[in-house]
Image (tube, rainbow, N blue to C red):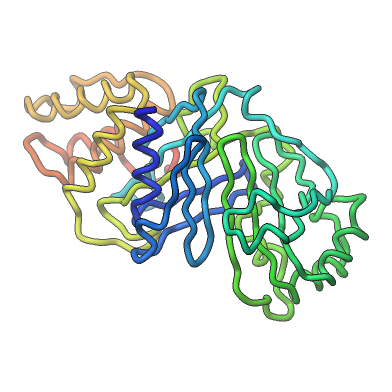
Length: 327
């Protein structure tokens, strides 16, 4: 329960972002500062409702957090996250391939939403049921009429009804649920990619559970992610003054939940720089994740300071010309 207690504190922290879903179909939630403290805890989990959505996280004994850092497209920055994983078989949901009416959403986070009708939109992904919830009679009729196919293949009647309706986006996983509450109908002409902004159809149907750049151990499937505050940016493309306290906070999370071999690599790189070793004396371990961890460490070192010829190390190991952000 110690790990779940930590997660409950994260839910109560306004600056932490969350997401749930599957590779190619994901929803996210960020709490507003005045939402802090709006959570409830019971024997089975913790729930928080915000102005824009809500999250329910179940207390599941088999959940394994995996903290990691990734390269960013910005050559000076990096990304970080904690994936909340389950063993593959334990992560499986319904994998429905057609729009399916599930009835009243009695598990809705807010009591006022429990009379809304929940529909699985039929994306046939394993680790999440991607759903819509609505009380709009036109949308309910359109979804029922299109029930033999997925939302991706549904006709214009469904898309028109989606534009005109108030509907909530709901993701269900074995670890809980995440809900997003749009407050008004979409503008005429709005496309499906805007109505469902976390949907990337080109990534679906390939049996992939997460990005290959994420160092998730074999046999585990991420069902949710949390994103603690980043020390060098507010959001992608929005830099801020480096916050050393936030950096140290995530490094502590990484030590607790990160892959031990990658943590050891970071420590070895920093120790070599502290000694003043030249980069040609350092032989990095092979593999995509190790290379990314080395490059992230050098980018962080640039901001945290310290001794060593960082320019030489970055020239040797973090040259960005002609490289992709996951190279």
